[in-house]
Length: 291
Length: 321
Image: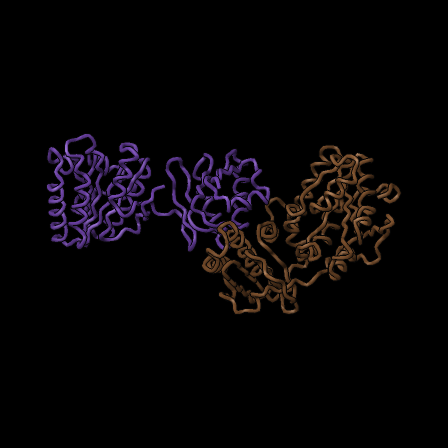
């Protein structure tokens, strides 16, 4: 868990310069697809600085139902090959890259777009000349666009960068970006986890929500044939009714030979499971956080 | 108890006795203990250190008896029922035919607070009805408050007198749970509450308590209170009569929360003392769990309605209600 504040991709607004650090392709694509789709829907120009062939990006956007070809044809979506952006100069030159961004923004606004939405994959720079000047670029780019309707999402692959490098680049941003919640009510949000696959519950769960929540989790659990993993590290409160629903879910999964794994259950939230005897259910696995 | 009293009896034998001196205490407790030892029955004693030391000094072999510290066993009535239950289930599973236990519940005469233990003494007659257990509840006649003695006499089917005679108790009221000592009002309840909510959701009540209580008590205790208030509000809204009113008081070192509704409260005398659900995933656990936590939970029945009072922090001086 990072110390940098988190923001869901759907909440990003003009002026935001955030980063996405991911360790699964599915996570990257989930966030980036939302980011691109929101920009296109808001009549912003979207410019994507890719780490590989633009066709790869267009393919995954197409798979996600974004219809990238139509927007690429109109000029609202631009996917740039590495040689057109991060690798256009050798060594990498932060000033040249900022100038390219500035011209991109000028043209976008001149064309009547409401804003410019930029995203890039700097992993392509790793090991190349000038890569050490990346932080300088991040600072200059952020300074340059503070008073213009520009959004930036910098993508960092945790499988490419070391943990120390990830921590350093995250510190260059005020927020990291996470996927939009799959479920949300007034007090509880549920996010997809990608490695390992599962769901992260954030907030509180009590009797007022359990019917809607149970209906949702049933649908979600039926979409996989594996064990259902719920990370409860950020579940601040669960009442007896909420715990009962989890126990019920595990009982129903038992019929299909699957388990419900409750990961990082807080000690305060564990007590009801222990007292009710539900910690002994055969297919309910409690992985508590040490007190 | 004597063999003729037992005479084929397999269920729970609940007996009270009153002593006025250490000699009378010895006259009441020693036959109970020695008969158990002679019959090969596990004997479990749960008194304060002084009485436990007395017993050890009277026994030829104190290792034949299990001594438990009273403070840990009698933390709350619900915990005591659960802990005793686990204890004698272990003994029975290990082959014991019957189990004997004797203890001293908290009341003002021994430095404790009797609130809730009136319901406990009555509830045992139902909860352990089928259990092969003999329990002897001895009270110091010199220190037991009058209202507590009244409850004891109305909740025990049998009385053991100082001459070691077992008699049927003519004052025993059965399993009605009506023998109660009024719950003392908390001094804070006479003051203007810091928060008063009318018909709040459980979440609104929790959030109000968290705002008032953060830093007043430790995080663990506050967590217990948050659980308790949530379950109490849920119960009031599901089973009570509107309006549900939540009042919260916070001082430098103490938190009090009242959750009141206009109903009569749970009619079940065992509510809060044992899990009231026969099904694995049934309802009826919230009030019980609240009574197992490290907080003071009291059920208060009045002419105006029913309240659950939750408290934590420094103990107040009791006042009359």
